[in-house]
Image (cartoon, rainbow, N blue to C red; front, side, top):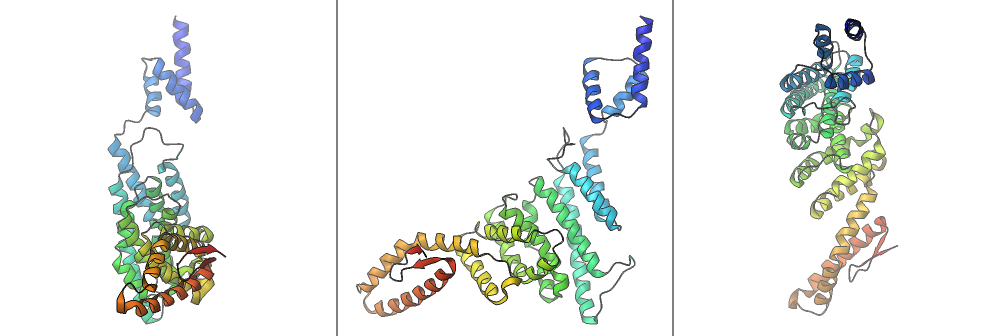
Length: 355
């Protein structure tokens, strides 16, 4: 009757006037699915439960949030908001329900903007190096701080892309940064190592199976940025900025092992020469090097043995002595590398055994 109706209306007025916990909100959702109320107060409650925004407006809001964060001047606010927005946008977020996926193009537009800004800052850094001082702009921030900010922005966007399995295009985008690769060669180490922070995140994601991309893209990005990473590793150790260096070393090795063996050979030998000179200033990829060694020479040992027997029997006429000399040099190199890798190589057959 009338009293019941007044009681329901009183409850609705109360519910409309007070804040709800998330558990209470879920109960109200369930209630309003089962029961229909013809009352203005009920409509006000429903307006708090169900958004009238379209998927496009939600994507537009996400884009605006990302833009606002990457252009923010205050570092503390920027870091706080990055954590907040990332927790909302990640697929593992407790807030994700039926929201549409992020618009990938919007995120990549912001990425490109940050990369363009980074190129400009490094060109400024080259000019500053020649003048002997690092310039400050109207923001009062030093050049190093502004470079670090853009790298932080890129890595933050990359984290979101990796979480959403959208980062494959960024691998190619980073591999094509010819301007940044060029300025890396001429910029001070205390500035250029910031670029390797981006490479570190990519190598870590590839090496830990979080980022899946085509073989050509992996090869291109590793060939482009592996050398700079070797040069900058000492600075990355001194200025870690959240990097887990042991995890990075392991992931770098795993990333190299995803390439064709011939490309692995070139990159591992590049690492070998750098490591032999700089040791602690270079990543220790010994474990991955051992894996590459065993895969390469265990697979090829039978062919090597057949060639050796064929040459020693004089099967090629006048070229036997030349081939024997080549085999001796090859055997010496294998034995030298084998001692490093913890395996023994039989010179005649190329067979491996654990030392």
